[in-house]
Image (cartoon, rainbow, N blue to C red; front, top):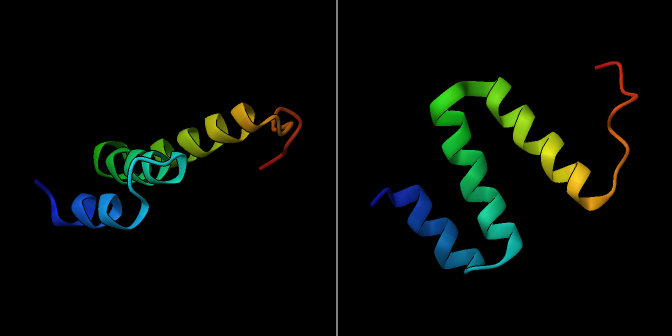
Amino acid sequence: MDILIEEVRRVFGNSDEGRFAEKLIQSYREGGARAVRAVVLGYLKRLGVDVENRED
């Protein structure tokens, strides 16, 4: 197991924040910054933030 993922699990446990942090780490490793951006946008949408009308 990866030490970074272990630390995230130790600090956050099985909370939403912990799962989000793990997903960010895995996304970055698999697809870089663009993959992380997609995860963050998906998370914001799930929280109800309107991210469709953004220019950046």
